Every structure is written in C-alpha cells, then in structure tokens.
Length: 272
Length: 284
View 1 (cartoon, rainbow over the protein chains, first blue to last red):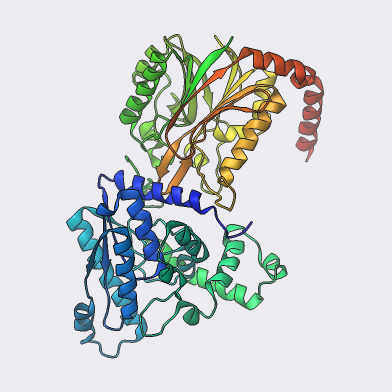
View 2: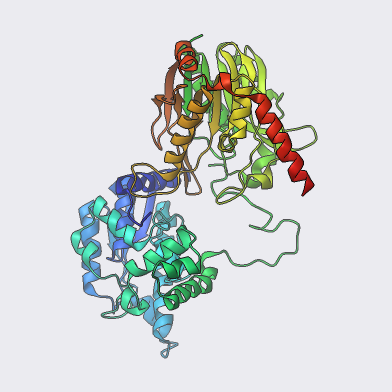
C-alpha cells in the first residue's frame, strides 16, 4: 500500500464526479478561483475535461501583496485550457475594511482575503448559474490549513479526498503546466511565504503519516515502529483534532424531535 | 436449458420512484424486443442507494400497484429488481423481487445489512430472516443482495438448497484507489464472484449500478460468471451499460462433472458441527 495512484483511473472518477454532480443540479457550468497554484490548476483541468472549457469560469483574485508570478501562472493555466478567465483584484475591498482595524495581524488579513474571494465566487455562481468548485486537498483539510467559509467553502470538491502528493501525480497525468507543478506550494499571503516553511514539515512527510494514520488506521505504536517520530505523530494528531470544527457544519442546539443532520438525515443528492 | 440474460447497469436517481420506474421499464422493453429471457437490475434500482430518512417515503408493498407495470411486463421476460419494501407492520426492507409470467416468483429481503465504514443500512432497514432457493423456468435460482454475498453461509445455503444460478443485485461504492489497474472494491468483488462460482459450481449473475451519490461513485462492472469461475461477459467500469450474456446449460453440466464438490458436500457433517458450535456458544 502506498500513496501512489493509478492516475488514469483517478482522473476518470474525478472527471465523472464533476460532470455528474454539476449536471444533476440542473446546471452545466462551474466557477472556481485560480490562485496560480497546483490545486486550483488541477481542479480547472478536471472541470474543463468534465464540462468543456466553455463552461468553466475562472477568477484570479490577487491582493496587492500577492506574488505577480501567481497571477501569471493562473493565466497560463486558463489560457492552456481555453476556459473563461477574469482578474478581479481584491485590494480595494480588503483595504477598505482594514482601514478600520489597522493593527490586524497576518492571520486576520489572510482569512479576510480568502473570504473576500469566496464572496466573489458565490456572486458569480448566482450570476452564471454555475456551481463553485472547491480546491482544498485532503492534506489541507485534515490539517485545517485553510480558512473556514473562505477557501474551504464550495459546492463540490473534486480533490478533497486526495493528498497533496497525489495532487502532484494527477497533475502530471492531466498536463498541468510544468512550472506550476514544480514550484513550491504557497498560500501567497505575503512575499516569499511557502506552505512547507510555515507548517514546519514537507507535504511528502506529512502525507506518508496521514496515509498510515487516517487511511490505514495504524495505531500510535505501529506508526512509531514504522519509523515516524513520536513528536511528529502527536503534533499531526493534535492538528487534526483541533481543526475538526472546520470540517463540520455549525453545531445546532437540539430541542425538537428532528434536528437537522442529527435525526433529520437526507443525502444532498436527494431527488437528483 | 440455455437462456440469455441482460444486466441493466443503470444509474438510478436518488429517491425518484417515477423516473427510475421509467428507466427500468425502458430497459425491460429493450430486453423483450431483443428476445432476452431474464433481465437483472441493481440493488435498490427503483430508489437509489443512500436514502437515509427517505426510506419510508419510497417504500412500496410487494403488491403495490406501482409494481403492476413490471409485473405485467414479466409475462414476456423474467425480471430481478431491487426496491424498498414496506411490510404491513411497517418494517422496511432492502428487498429484491424475481418476477416471471406476471407473478412474483420470489421475494428476498437482504439479510446482512452493512453498518460500518460508509454504510449505515441497519439504521434504516429491518433485517431479512430467510435464505431460500426457488424454481424458475431456467432452473433453480438464488437471489441475494450485495453484502449477503460477503457472508459465506448465504451462497452456501442457497447452493445446498439446489441453486444453480445465483443472482446478486448490488450497489457497490467504488473505493480504494491505488497503483492497481482497478479500485480495491472492484478487485475484491471480482475475486468473490469468481471464487463463489468455483466453490459452489454455479453461475453468478452480478448486476452493479453506476453513477454518483453525494460524491460516492458506484463502479459497475456487472458480470456473468460461469460455474468454472471464468467471466462470460463483463460491463463497463463506472459507465452505464447493458450487458448481455448467454447462460449455457452445457457449461453447468460439464463443470458439475469435472468438479463435483456440491455433489460431495455433506449436509449432515455441516449440520452436526454447526449444532455443536451453537450448543457450545449457548453455554457461554
């Protein structure tokens, strides 16, 4: 067992997922944010194959501190696919807000930017009759390395069950531009930021651990005997636990006999 | 006797009885026009799979007028189809019907309701309590539903009850991506159908659905398996299909001569040992 996947089969499943789950809602289009990074580029490739490039609307939403290279890479991916693409700068909205709170730290600013982008995608979702595609991978979702109601918000997420390592592999298969595959992953919140520097470990290291811990359900002793550092195991376990709220609906206080999602249970594809 | 079978590898809509009914009748009519003898549909073909609280809403009595059209069509072709059954005392079963000559020939209520991992069936369904073979114009058959097949005792009992054709209706979610050519669930099922056919010297008609429900894919790959364990016909993976296979009497006859395991299987030894185990367990 390993993280390596049959990329052709994975591609077929995920393209089928986008096509069917979009169309069964009664629409044909999708919108997504293109950051210039590999996750959103991969989702754009999957969507273009599933729906046709004419039905995919990408939005590039830089802030004034974003690396200009990110925008260039986003446009490169959009151009290669022939999907619709618009640049909507978020600097005026974000700066207008923080003029009231000039002391806000990087985390607040980063979250605000992610949520600003979300409102733009959902606005175009309504304008275009299109579903918002999520671009968070399984590694980020498990670690909670994303903004709740920001980049974590979407209608459908084709890559939420594949690890970053597998995102790289599938991106090779789909023909995502080499420059996007090869660059260091970054949330691009400030100049020179990289995910791996901020997290303190590499995606390949943490994906191996997550795969053994989550997918294979190995217990702590088994993980240690497999060679994982106990401190690393505990840190990752805590990250998963402490970010779990981000992966759940808001908690509802129960008073009736049928409470939404507790004893009122329907699939989202109800009637579809 | 030889007969032709069609495995309707369809994509039911979740909770849409009318739409699914139309889809099923269209496939049945196609089968009739092509001179097919038996058409098999997936588990819960009339309703879709992840029903959750919809179960009581889509449940039908086995004698419901909503099944009348299928019953009528079964004058021209035998039909095996999955649905949610409501009993008069308001239990709900994950059931399958075998319809023939305008009548219900057999009703099977799924015995083993998976409730682990992504499955939650025991929360919504009552457990079936019997496992019986039945006679058809194509010989003695057994009808089972998905997880039933993963309990050795179920196909074993059906085989001991004289089954020579095992029909398995399935809604198997695709999962377990790896470097392998197929998904883990596909590999597991293909081993299971082939091995079960070999162990019991019977043919297997396996019909699995396709489509997605809330992000879960169903992988299809319906197949006609000969009593030797070899695959006679196999459907597309992940895509809709309509798989036609010829089920040959001669292949069954020859396999039962080459590998007479079922002839030699001792019911009395099995029963003796099972009774002993039961007694010993009751002592605990």
